Length: 164
Image 1: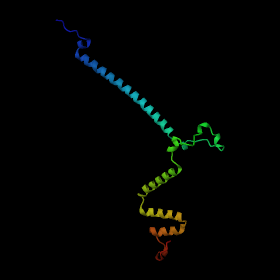
Image 2: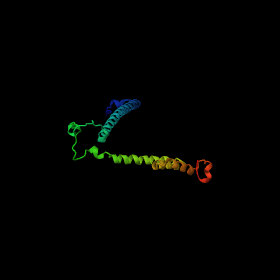
Image 3: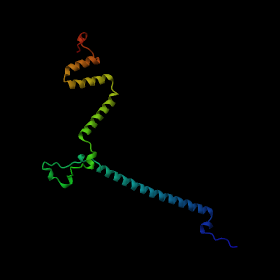
C-alpha cells in the first residue's frame, strides 16, 4: 500500500501551520478594518454633503435675498420670475409674517413664564405694577401706590395712609 500524498500544508509541522494561520488571520483583519474605515469615512462625507444640499434647497424663498427693483415687475430677470397661479414648494412651507410673529410672542411668553418662577412674588408684583404704569400712563400715582403695596419704608405721613 502506498501512503496518501500530503499537501505541503499537511506535511508541515502543526506549529508552523498555526503560526501561518494566525499571521494570515491578523493580516486579513487589518485589511478589512482599513477598508471598512475608509468606506465609512466616504459614506459619512457623502451623507453630510447631501444633507447640506437638501437643507439649502429647503430654505424658504423669502429668506434668500432678491435684488431690489424699483421698475416694472416685467423687467425682472427670468430666473426670479415664477408663475403666480400656483405657489412654489418653498413658499407653501414658509411661515407667514403673522405666524412668525405669533411664534415669537408665544416663545417670549414661555421664556417670561419660565424665568418668573425663580423670582420672588414681591418682585413679580413690582414688575406687574410697572407694566401697568406704562400702559396706563399714570406714572407718579402708580409708583406711590406700588411703594405702599410692597411695604417700603414709610415717611412721616404713614398714619394718614400717605407714603413718602
